Length: 171
Image 1 (cartoon, one colour):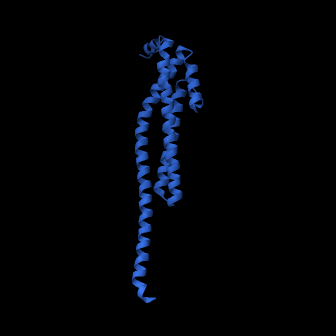
Image 2 (image 1 turned 120 degrees about the vertical axis):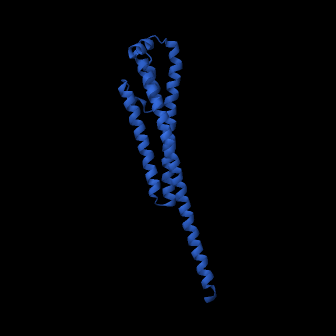
Image 3 (image 1 turned 30 degrees about the vertical axis):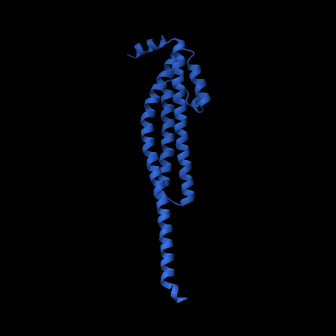
């Protein structure tokens, strides 16, 4: 079956490669955008911790996102390495596009790029679903931290009012 797929890929005309390359380019952009969302969420959690103080829930969620990002990078690197591509060359959009362009010069390279793209795209579906749950949990932790802070402020205000209400005639 793999031999048949390989033979079929050898027959991909270079004209068809531009459509495939566009999809691979889109995949690279999607991965980088997703990682941008993760980094923005981590930064948001850091800001929340600065604003609202300690929050183990926030620290845990921040670590979950950092771990997710590392795991994604490791999986992408493994998929690329397995197919003979260098993950370090995919660190930026431009270098990834150059790597894809270089791969397109040979039929075997086109096959490797297509296989890596398929493997990574499938993995991204699962990882994006996991990320969705992690970001929802991080947002809930953020909202809990805000609610806790507001509740503490309300309780302090209530104590202050009760104190002055109970002691206002004594002064």
